[in-house]
Amino acid sequence: LVKERSPETAVIVVTGYATLESAIEAMRWGADDYININKVKSITKLLPLVEKALKSRKLRQQFIETIKQQAVDKMVSTTVSGNLRDMSLTSVVNIICTEMKSARLVIRQPNSMPGGGKREGVIFFENGQIVHAVVGSLRGAEAIYELLGWDEGPFQMESNVVAPRQTITVPWT
Image (cartoon, rainbow, N blue to C red; front, side, top):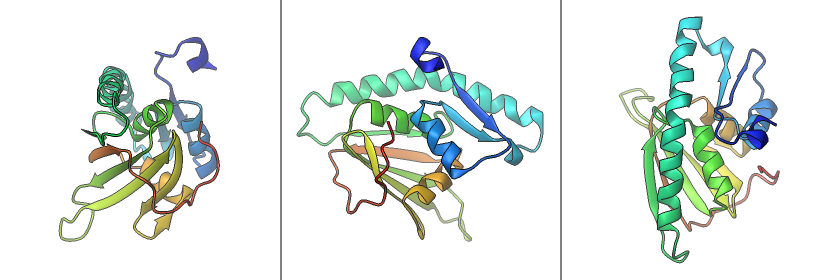
């Protein structure tokens, strides 16, 4: 409802009862971030998350403009990159869905594996809908839920990439 009346307003969903369903619903409704308060150790840790959401509003507009400029010719594969430290995954997903993109979004979580290795997650979109996601052994909506917990790491979106399979059939927009 907030996004309908004022699309530029930053919306952050903060909950003590985080579930896969509520995270997905928050994304569908256009939340800029989804925070499980049980994972925030103190209220002082919440302020940087709010500041990040506000900062990401400007980055979000730049991201949209880049996608629009590069999408003039739909046959050309384009790449846009950034870091979840600056823009939440929820915002990135909402932009891709809103722009009706078919794309692959790869997110890497640095130093998340023993020995300093990187953990990687991939989300596939077709015509603005999430159709497949994978993180390690997780597939589908469970992978999306895991990725929503990542708050830093580089991401790269490549347009016009076809999903290898469909593990998500629920509409996201």
